[in-house]
View 1 (cartoon, rainbow, N blue to C red):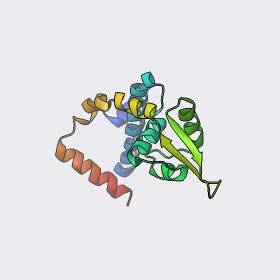
View 2 (tube, helix red, strand yellow):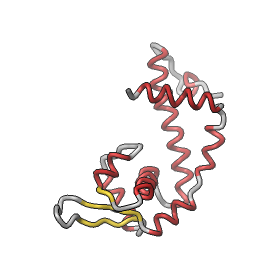
View 3 (cartoon, rainbow, N blue to C red):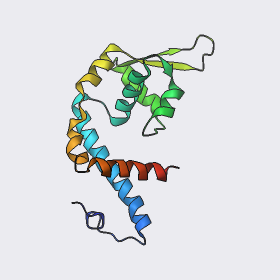
Length: 146
């Protein structure tokens, strides 16, 4: 079992501060795991997130709608989408009535890529929690964001 204080060789002024650092440290750790799982597919976690959002939308949606739905907000969403367009995974089109509005949608190649990506490798990390612990963790994390 991990011990944050030992892992980062630090002490904390309170349990609240320790919890905050622990959330950030764990998120970074899981990001590294996710990045290594996606590396063979040639996409990053934010790019995966964009593809997942577009697949779930089932139709073309605006770039702003994608930004609003992203798990990890990114200031360079346009650049991420540029790379996905270059790989022929998504396509963009301008709104006929308002040229400032850009629509994006996932292409068949993007859907195929998502079908091949399995996040089963995360299971060993999350299966260490019982179902009731996972529910409790979700409740606590939701509480922080209220």
